[in-house]
Image (tube, rainbow, N blue to C red; front, top):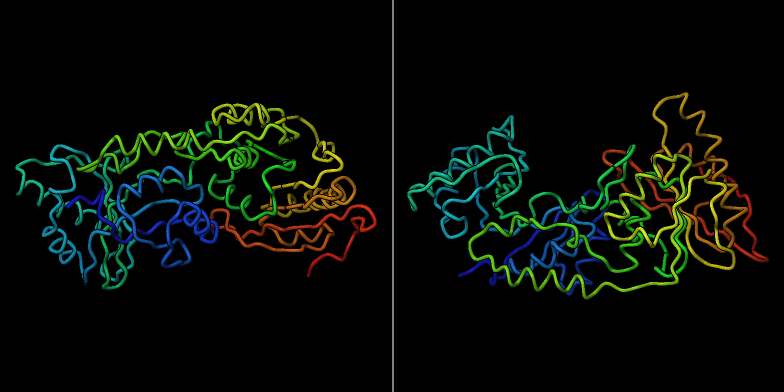
Length: 394
């Protein structure tokens, strides 16, 4: 029985608050989501179907195929349960594998100890059954086994992904305080953008948001930028299946010749880096990069696109005081120059956001790393319903 063709329980993890966008992606790929939770979704799929998920998902982190659920009170029971599992049918004799874990058990002070017990069980089983000892290490470049252990409930998975899907692989120069690609994609999916109208991105930094917008508009998937996944290092991997799925990525790319994506930044160095990242992603010719103050950004008139801004949050009192003027200017820019558009401000400082002076239509919750953030949506009326300054939010 090959796991590549046998459906099992699959858990796809993501960062907190990205679940709605991950669920949307999974459903669009034709899968039925059976359960959602704070950091992911569950469904049934084979390992071959996990290949498709890995290549296509923008918002996920790991695609985990469940092998076994069991009870364990301590590390010795983890060892005994996993030594009895037929790892010789999954891992190559002379392969390389890594262990990752999520452990909440009172007998474990360091998750590395749990990892060690898993590694010992797998290695001892493989040596006993094959006479060979596979190599192990921390680098996620081969097969990956994942342990979830909470209290006395444990579950062991094949992690079909390896390095996180949340990093899409094209960004060579991250720049200052970069937004994770999966977060950037999720925030774009949360907007009202139709993928045809102008996408205006002042304060673009290293270009992640503008690049993700171009990739989403053209249906270009993250699998185009990566050539190594953990599923490639398991017994039964059929390269033909992978190459077919990879080929579909190329075929499903669409052209949007009239689309305008405009990205600006006051820093010339940031724009240089953003152009390099866009070139690596294959979308440099789709994005109009310019060095200028955000208020000088071109916003095409007579359109109904979106303006997306990700200003600094401010960490110290002096920085916050300086940013108050910036946030006020953002409100003026949107009110005066972005009529007919939807405006979006992604920020981790809700006090500063009040300085924008416009009433948010929606306040969508996200995290940027550990920072509690909001994507604030503003409807910027045109014509007789001209944008107007409204009382700041409470």
